Image (cartoon, rainbow, N blue to C red):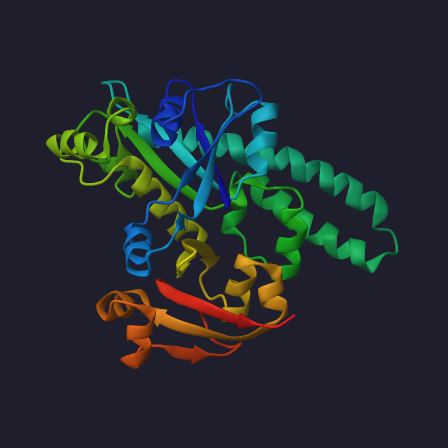
Length: 325
């Protein structure tokens, strides 16, 4: 499960968006967190085919910190996997591009303070120690970049450098998505045409409705899919995640895994024993399984493949893992 921090300047509507997306009341405290299902209609279809007793979706956790980018908020956001940057794009005085630049500047400054402290400590330890010298070189490069008011993602980092930097939970190295909080029915502002346009007020209005009524109201404003669906899809793209599925009489479930993961790595997402004792994976594409009408039907039609340890899992693969521990 991935954690997504919702970040925004005062009056951006970030907390309204958090409540609307997660359909939860803001409880207050150190941080507001809510776990939500990743929308995926394939789960219900496979559960119906296999007559599964249970269904389970992949999940994400949204994090909204009262007060925003305070010391507490920054500490909370350092623990997240990605950031959802919310900018105000409603009202005559809205300047979403400037707001986004201000947010980025605050995050750069937060990382600069953290890396600056790391540089000082590394310098004290680096005398005559090659390992620490390597750490110091990485931190000094990061400091130089941040001091030039540029995010760490602009740098070129090898695996060793990334491992060092990630120990500091850098905010400007995390994947970002941008949400423009717009008037009902409006698209993204021209200055941020790559942003996801969401009306937090409209999403809050439909949050308490049935799915059918919510879809009807959203459609009336020209919105094809709920904000939650679009935000999670953007986060999956930013984090380079795909979904694979398992199905059977007991349960149908969706799982997240990084793009490029091998079959044993995907098995490990289900349970570490499956990765450790991996023998093979029986694989059917989702569309092939639906067309065949059952797992046995897919096997009879020659659509079931037996894959080994080098197989790279694809979006929508339905897996049955064989293992022995």
